Length: 103
Image (cartoon, rainbow, N blue to C red; front, side, top):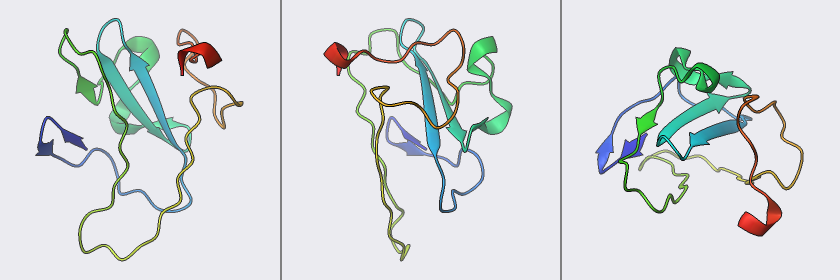
């Protein structure tokens, strides 16, 4: 995890293949990550428990970035789905997917 120029490990290393899920509560500035359908670090977006990040109340833009640490000799393949296709794993029930006119 890299947040505000500070790096830290969040959860176990990601092995391939893996599906990374993200839940964002934009109204509260809370962000969670899941790996293969399991929320990381005992977190739960439905209960607002243990978010990976708490964004400042004045954030206006989030730019998703995927990266590999320098020196890691691996290839990655990435495909993003913001809700225009069915998700591989269920989203938290109180969260909604983006509509096509919001992307």
